[in-house]
Structure formats: structure tokens, C-alpha cells
Amino acid sequence: MIDSGWAEQVRRLARERDAVILAHNYQLPEIQDVAHHTGDSLALSRIAAESDASTIVFCGVHFMAETAKILSPDKTVLIPDAAAGCSLADSITADQLRAWKAEHPGAVVVSYVNTTAEVKAETDICCTSSNAVDVVASVPADREVLFCPDQFLGAHVKRRTGRTNMHIWAGECHVHAGINGDQLAERVAEVPGAELYIHPECGCATSALYLAGEGVVPAEKVKVLSTGDMATEARHSSATAVLVATEVGMLHQLRRAAPGVDFQPVNERASCRYMKMITPEKLLRSLREGTDEVDVPADVADRARAAVRRMIEIGQPGTGE
Ligand code: 13P
Ligand code: SF4
Image (cartoon, rainbow, N blue to C red; front, side):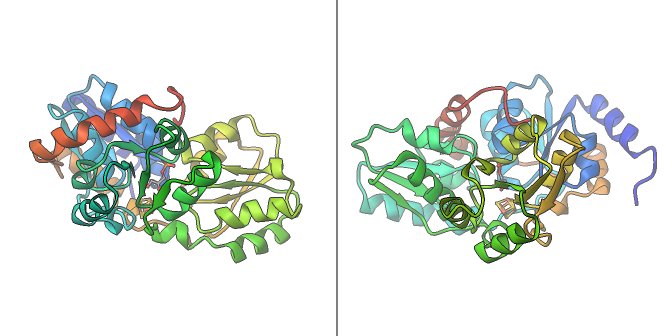
């Protein structure tokens, strides 16, 4: 249980340390509320790159803090618990990617930001869920694309770009893959008339488009969105109810953005244990003691930087927060 002075203490310590606190949309509500910025992966990467603060405290998972360190090697980057990993980032290693590249000489590698720094160092362009379509569309049509590691995001990008020379790694996030088509169909029947916000990492993304194709849900009510774009969409929503297919932490931002809309999870058990490892107590400790510091070896960061810079340049700026 946190006491009433916790938020003031966090903000005071952040000032003393010249730190900016960034929180992903899947963080615990109290962490989202105390952070200086809350948003999706792309928005937070851009803020980390532009911030004047000498320390970045990343309330998210390890690859996010690593991405901030790659962009700002001279800044101190802290994560309140370095054990906060990501099952999707673990689904491809740098050795596996090197072997895949050797099978497709000349292909352009597009990696989701949910990857380790070593994988980014083997990558041509990184992307997030909010700009993956634009990133792949930026690759000349005659070049093969190797897209990793998320198969559901890859399938979404392939559908949207109509690209045939794109190979997709068979990785997945255990939380999003667990939100399946049967659950979605069940929830749609329970909440008739609801709009659907679907994160493209979800196992049910294809089913959502199938339901639209069959006329079960009008096509204009099915929205495949990054977490930041969900918050933007909610701000001007005229829906009565919205079924949300993503990690449940997102509901906090959505309910704040549009208190009059009934946001319900497609799967209420879709909680990321890694995101939830960042607790109020650990954030306080991080600010007090400077833990856990994230470092990326200079040679790896140097090889990964161009791919991450291209990621933050592509797609609409100023959104996702
Ligand atoms: P976005 O916030 O970029 O949509 O990413 C979702 C995610 O799974 C981060 O781990
Ligand atoms: Fe990784 Fe999935 Fe957790 Fe996001 S929700 S951090 S993709 S394990």
C-alpha cells in the first residue's frame, strides 16, 4: 500500500535527480499517474531522445530502457526492476536473426522495438505497432523484407501493405497471443453495438477483421491500433461501449481519456507480469538509490542506433502520448 505522500516524494526526488519519469500504458495506474509522460513505445522513445533531463527513469520493460540508452548514451537510464523482461523480445536472438539473414542475402530487416539491443544491432529499421505499416512501406518494393519477431503484427502489416516479398518470424507475446478469436466472438455477442479496439499483437486481430467481413460488427467499428492511438481515438469517441483487446493496463488511460465510454477488456486476465514488476515501492527506490541502471555495450549501441533513429523519424510525430 502506498501512502498519501508517495507521489510528492517521487516528484521531489525526480527533481533532485534531474530525472524525467516515463511510463508505458501497461503500467500500474499509480505509476501512469505519477509519471511525467505516459504513452506508447514510439512516443516514449521520442520523448526519451528529446528530453533535456540527465536521467531517464523508464517505467516499462527492459527493451524500452535499452532503446532509450541506445538513443542517449550519455544519459543515465534507470528501470525500477531490471528483471522486467518481455516474452516477445525473447522470441528471437541475435544468432537466430544472423542465420535468417544468411538465408536471404540483400533482404531488409525490420524489427519490432520489442527486441534486445543485440537484435537491433542486426536490424536495418526498427518499428513499433504505431508505425510498422509506414516503416515497411518505406522499403523499396523490389527488396525482400524480413520482419521479426511478432507474427500477428507481421500479418497485419502484410495485409495493410499488400506486400508479397515479406517473411515473418513466428514469435509472439504470450499476453496478446492469449487474446483469441473465440473470446472476441463471445464478448462481441455479450456487448452488442460495441466498438472494437484491437492491438495488432493480438491473436484475435484476424478474427476481428473476419467478424467485420461477415457483417457481425460493422467494419467502421473495428479499429486496429497501437496503445497510444487507442488513447487518441478514445478522446474523440462517440461510442457507448468499446471492447479492448490488449493488456489490461490500457484501460486506465482509456477511462481517463473518455470517462463517459464503457471500456471493457476482451480478456480480463490479459495482464503482463513483466510490466507489473514496476511497483510504487521500486520506483521510489530507483529514484533514491539510482537502481537499476541500464547499460548497452558501446559497440552494440553504435550498431543499433541508426535502426532506432529511423524508427523515431517514420510515422506521425506528436502522437501516442
Ligand atoms: P505499443 O504501446 O507501442 O502499442 O506497444 C505495446 C506493447 O506490447 C509494448 O510492450
Ligand atoms: Fe512484452 Fe507482451 Fe509484456 Fe508487451 S505485453 S512487454 S509484448 S510480454
